[in-house]
Image (cartoon, rainbow, N blue to C red; front, side, top):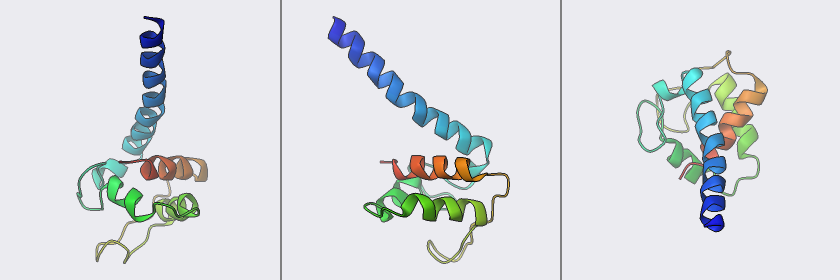
Length: 101
């Protein structure tokens, strides 16, 4: 019984940061153009994670793109800059995006 309770507690603890990061993404309007598992205006986060899998510089690259915007990587529609996102938030969002499956 103790093992089951411990396993449930660990699962809840692991899920909490993911939910907090999705909450951050929602509060910064990221979810207006992106979803975890499907393309909306921009790519699905799971597709972004797959594209950058194994890239050790991916968090920094994506954090910069989150703040400054970009174009050409995912098609003709550019991603606008997000001046409401600071560096720490951008890195937290990038790490969360890269963990999408």
